Length: 140
Image (tube, rainbow, N blue to C red; front, side, top):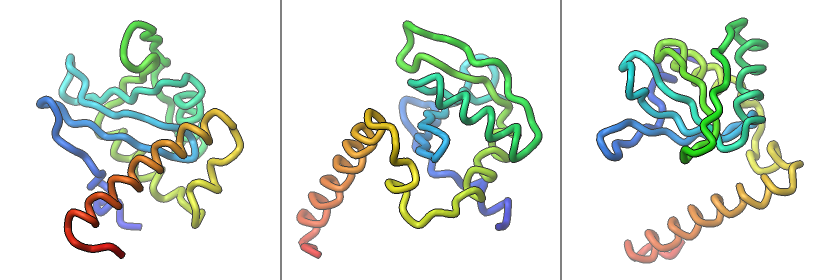
C-alpha cells in the first residue's frame, strides 16, 4: 500500500488541537498534538495494556522502540507515550497495513469488558447513522 496515501489519517479539529481516535486490534488510542513540542504527538490510552500492545507491535513490525509509558492518573487519559510525528505517521501506516481481517468486532472479541465497551461505541455510532439517514429522508 502506498505510504503517502496512508498519511491521511481521519483527523478532526477540536479546541484548536488535532485529535484522532484509533481503534485497533492492539488497543484504543487518542492521539493529540503535544502541547510542549509541535514535532511530537501524545498517544494516549485509558488502559496501560493498550500502550504496551502498541509498543510490542511497533517493535515487532517496525523494529522501533517507543519511549516509556507515562502514568497520568489524574488526567483524562491515564497513560500516554510521546512520539515524534514523523514516527507516528509510520506507525499509523503500519497499523493500517496490518489489517487482514474482514470484521473488526470478531477480530477484537475476547475480553468481556472491552467487548461490552466497544459494542457501546459501535451502537452509539450506528444510532447516529440511523438518525442522520432519517433526517436526510433516507430510510435505507
